[in-house]
Length: 486
Image 1 (cartoon, rainbow, N blue to C red):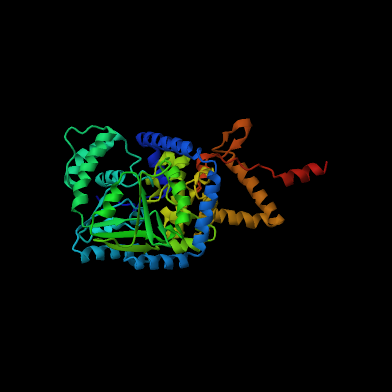
Image 2 (cartoon, rainbow, N blue to C red; image 1 turned 120 degrees about the vertical axis):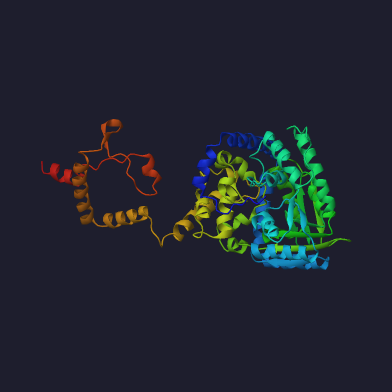
């Protein structure tokens, strides 16, 4: 169970492969369509929905402007309540902190609440290298882990799997990881959920350490909040002797009244419910349990420094943007090469990791039609199209030191067009080239025009799909001089 996004191809190549998988496209279309319909119904019940969106965006922006103050307040609130706070600059440091806590307690396995932050830092893989097994307890995450697969959605990581595929995964893989699936297991959802429940129950009762994330962290009381739909989070948070929570520093909200806004926005935007079935809150350590909180940076201050891109840190991981995105619906999440797929992943990954460093990351800002549906759906009004365009410019700027053929061509054209004499010489040259090229390889275009066919310009999608007209034998200027004498 060691699948990883490391080494994934750039988005165009990965998307092309995904588009050829008809079963994947059927699964995605059915799932995203169902979630969209549920969300639309419950959002339509709230007359002040737009005011809630504005309030959520304002709270997040104000918090980010004073993030240092709120983080120090959160740290004090947590330590006053018996928790140990750790600061992690990057993924390696965060993983080492969690592993060291496990070793201090002689723990060789942990149970996990679904957490995007721990997936972001590759915690499971890092723990495995030190002999510590991490078990996912969210149903969809369990499916992904047992299938040696990768998550493809923020809310529903196994959205690319249908019931028949899940049944086969359970029958083939559960026994090697613990309690086996029943021999007569069918693909009925109730039976699949029951098999997962029995499989996980022994892990909950045996584990001495749990790892969680947090949807929100309330600075004034040091309270961490996890919202979920299955109850597995409640089991992880209460049973083990040691609880370690890995929390991105952008998850902070100043007060409980601020939290109220997001507990209205999140369930409607994510699961299409008025409220989550389980909302768990805990403040520091409790009797009989040791609590640690790892506050994770891992590129978040880089994103914060970007005046246009910092709005991505408002994200509450609801996945609404994925469910309305025409690109995501056709390619799925694996094509994005990250635990953060879809429109939010297309901006969050380059912001956290930087542009000009990795071709796969640099391809993500182009994984969009810029239709704007993601902005309309976002409960905290992240203008994803604006950030995508901004990041495209940063990708271009990052590669200016090694100009491509198209960039050289455009620079040459700029030099020619800047001077009338150079332009005249170029026109005469093109006329001569047109007469020579016109003797071979041309074909008739609509309207009787002649074309040279498709020219092999390296890296040009334009010339791969379009015909280039042959240069005219005579330029307009030459024609005007000749005709003007009459």
